[in-house]
Each structure stands twice: as structure tokens, then as C-alpha cells.
Image 1: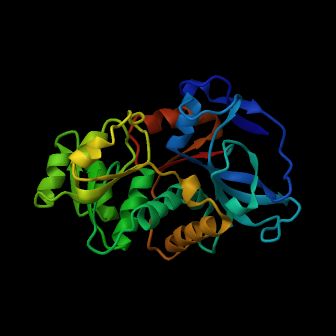
Image 2 (image 1 turned 60 degrees about the horizontal axis):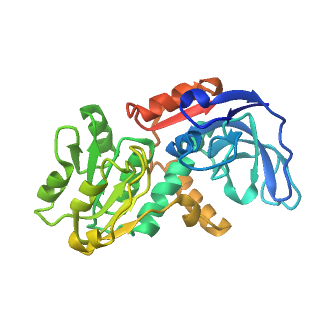
Length: 322
């Protein structure tokens, strides 16, 4: 089968289309014939070596497709089932053998491309809004990169829970997408100081929570946007990882809370994984969440998909198709 591998960490050109054997599902696994592959920033972290893995490095953390075969002990899935999965690396391929507990059967009305576009980022938005910081009616949230794949789902989910949302974007076109998703205010961060604007929009108080997937470039101003005892949730490194921080800084800026979560720790059990996945997919089926797919690329064009993602010029979700 064809798969994308990285033999030497580096730029998008290191994504090499390779020929490898079709895997055999082990006990507790399912073999999936992949239809669509989700492209995520975490894929770029493994490609560059920011996240460590032994070469050749398999790339990709989510996909949708059809169950081809099941390993011993799998009872809840069968060949022919339409499914999606995430958090099992190696989805940039024609087939993948993944743990059954990290695989969800698609409900009626959910297409395979929508499922691949929604699962990882939707579950990320779910844990951020339901568990890391529990959004309630009246919560004021600042959401960076609000027109990206995670950002658009995060805005919608926070709005479903009753938040007042201040979004940041780079262009008027992205700002319009954020508003359509439910943002109450949008700051064009290239033209405005987002920390000063966040404070102005909250009457000087600051926001309750900042969701920051950008990383190094926004970190300190994200702290400046918070109310006393507010929380900064830094969950991505799009501009690079945040440098070391002195804990005393948090007290100086208002006894703030800082957390750096990851989906793996918020969907660490089958029960938690299936809860989050089911909520996301059911809300999409009911029309409560909308998924925006920017572009679908052939698998061989994975390098271009990474270039486009890292350019910050895209909106919504990028997919690959074997």
C-alpha cells in the first residue's frame, strides 16, 4: 500500500510517498481501508521533529473509511462498517490498523469526509470547553485562530454552552467565518492589539479563559487578556512552542491559571473517547455543529497540504484522499 513516511525530520519535502505492506490487525484492532485523512498541526510537529518519534516516522492522527477486517476480541465493529478514528498515528496511508476503542462507527447522516474533518478537532474542542475549562452561560472566552479547523468548532461549541466569544483572526474574510460560527466580537490581530481590545471589550476586566493554539507569538498577550484568576489554555504551537515561564509571572498578572493540555489525556479511556466522539458526531448529524472543509488533496500532495496549513492562509479543515 501507499503511505507517507518521514525518514529525516524537516520541511514538507520530507513527506515521502512510500510503498509498505498492508498491516494485519492484532487482537483488539481493526483494519480500516481509508477514504479521507484529516490534516492537523500535530502532523507538522512530528514531521519537523518537535514531537519525537523514531524514523521512519508515520504521519497522521485521524481518518475515516470502512472496516476491512477485525482482530481477535473485537465485538462492536464488523467488516463494512463506516468508521472514523483518531489518536493512532499513521493515517497518511491507504490502510491503517488501529485500536478498536479509538474507532467510532459513524451515525446515519455523517459522510466520510465530514467525519475525517471533524473527529480530532471536534474532540479537542469538546475537552477544552467541557473539561479543561467548563464553559457556562455568561463565560467570556477569547479564542485565537478562530477561522481554523479547531477554531471554528471551538467557537461553535463554546456558543452552544452559552459563552460570550471574542475571536482573533488575521483577515476580514476569516473574521466573517468566525462570526458565522458564533463569535460575538472579532479582533483582527494584525491591525489591533488583541490584549488591549479584549480588555476594552470586557470593560477593563479581562476574559475568563483564553484558548490559544498559536503558541509563542501570542502567549504573553494572552496572559494580559485574562481577568484575575482567569485561565490560559495553551494547546498548540502554530507559531512555535512557548518558551520556559517563571511561575511568579502568573501571580504578578493576577493569580492566573496556566495549563498545556492534550487530547490523549482527555480521551485516555474507551468510555471518555466514545463520549466525546459521540457528542461531536451527533451534534453534526443534528445540525448543531457545522464542518468547514477548505480543500481535499491527493495523498501524494501531502507536502503541499502542509505548506498551505503552515502558511496560515487556509480556513477550516484540510483533507487528504488516498
